[in-house]
Picture 1 (cartoon, rainbow, N blue to C red):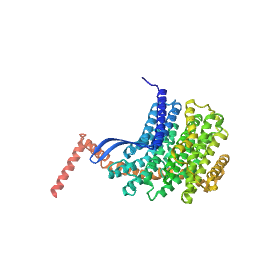
Picture 2: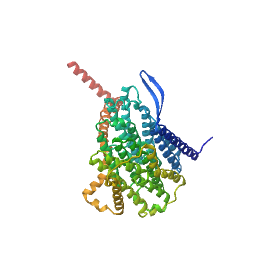
Picture 3: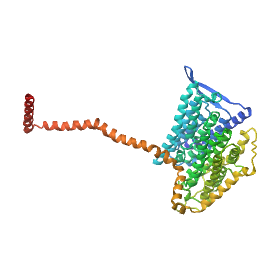
Picture 4: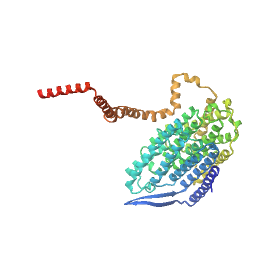
Length: 579
């Protein structure tokens, strides 16, 4: 039986939806019975070392797989319409499916080798997806993505080498046993560095906004629940090791600064997809920082709720970009709520959920995180970064809503507005429902007892104060012109610093590789195209060529040349005899 393109897309959607249902039932069963399934299949036994393929099915892995399956199903159904004009849409679908399978391999592995296979699969397939639309910009973005992630791959390879000391790569057996073991401390450092590259923490943040060169359905999948959260998920699994490290507070500071930096940069950005990418970066900083404070269930809770509304936000952005004739500049938009009301509804729900508006999905996790921070024994700087970043989230969300939906339409020259696509809307509505109900549902499912956090009234309402100020400033900034401020040199330089992610893309690309590339250029000019040419191929060729010209002259049968050479030869002989 030969399937056409549409039926394959539908079958993929149906399969992931069924898989999501299976995972949901499995999760409820595992939580109710408090069980964990550990399956092991021995591949190679060599002396005292066994290489085994291991699967760990506990409530955490099945719950994560359920959410990944749901988002994958929605994205595939969405892509059916989004990629309909693409000639190679089957290649796109196969790449997306490979990506999802790599993520599953990472989720269910308690073995560092199978984790590495999934980890590397994510990096490789994400490169193929980022360069899907082939041009110089996407090539550069793809190289930046794959080389940044390569640092994390090297760290995992070194972890595999270090874990040979224990005779097995099933890390899950050694976490509790060897907390104070020196090799385990080295392994912990490498795991943290690997997770920081995958989850784009400072100084590896430049690749995440660059990866927006990929098609929008890929962004919805990659930057919500799969690639960028792989690092956070790995740290959740290794959490008991991290708590014994001495420099956890330093990594906490780095992740808090990532959250702060991404929030500020999003307010300066005008590319729709990059604003949402920077928002993802900010939320990743939030997950990493709360994880390093020791609240792994809370980090996992926010990871899942964030996956829902962020995937929806990217899907809405894709619809708007399609409608705007592939234009991503928010200054060219405005008033779209009159033309695409359903997409506007989904976008508003996901944005408000991101901001932590009460009783949407994001509220349950973000409010809980901020209250735990308020209760924790932390310094003022971390406290300030958390609350300021929450205000910035409201700030850029309000600015985005103002630019897209409330301000006047700015692109009347290409008046190409049309109603929404049926397939896209259905997949978006599925995620919109989850963006509303997943927070409360997960809080009942994951936590055995209700969190009762007792704080003073001013601290309890701090989140609402900060969000209100952020909303007001977002409205204010999007309603006024700030061009006059740029005339001051100080403001101009400050704006450059803040809008370019604290110069991080330049520092980690040109700043890092310029000297090496320059050295390589000099090496090529002086050695490859210089001395080695003179003393090898080109030099030998020139010598032989010159000699052949001389011999050619000698052999022209000219009497004068023969007579001259005879005289020279006789003079030479006479000189020798005299000596």
